[in-house]
Length: 294
View 1: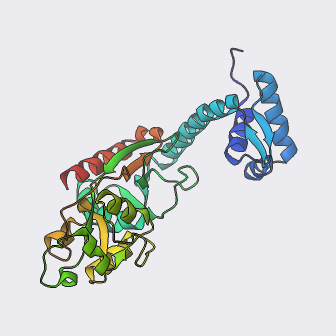
View 2 (view 1 turned 90 degrees about the vertical axis):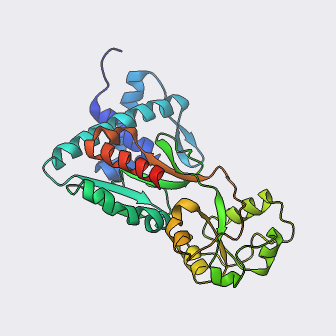
View 3 (view 1 turned 120 degrees about the horizontal axis):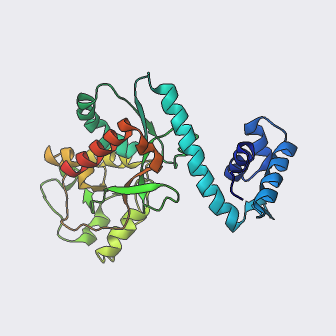
């Protein structure tokens, strides 16, 4: 077959593949489920390749269908991006960044005035959430995520991978500047954010034997844990890049020199087509450079 399938059939296939539901696809497209099924059947007949199969949850993509969907989705995203650029070409250029509350408050917000001075014509919008962004549905350009960097179908680049280090208020240790032994941590509350495994990884790396890694309060995000540390309520784990100012003004100190890398880092995540926009390229270049300078 040398010609493209009908655009409507491709549109219905792409929508159904995203939802893995004919009913939900029909709702989004404002048509009947029968109309969706008919277009998918026509496409499969035209290609002479089965695109979906039945499973316990309803339908699933075949291996061929999965590969086809990935290519089709990229093409539709490019068309969506081209349409958005056309509609917004006279509007103020807008960049939407999805990130965790901790990264937003500890790093991004303090640095944004520098970008605003360089590009006053751009509108930077920050969406704070701990869940993964759906770039199409949430109208997000970039996401900053704390993890291992495995985000299928997206480009991911390491932003911050400082070792994790314990930090606390100097008031907590009173007249002491440092603790002599890691086992002395058992005398203080350990402060956790939503990534409760960080203390376990750190204690395992330091071969501490008498400290319960899962003891101490758990906060919804790293902002809560660091705020409690600054108030002298315990010891938190942090990356030096994110608490540089607090260390400089002695709100926080590092009670140990020991630090570890866990493989977990902050990644900049985005669909590759977002870089077709000049303002998106400028923001990405600034962000990556600003992280290196800090």
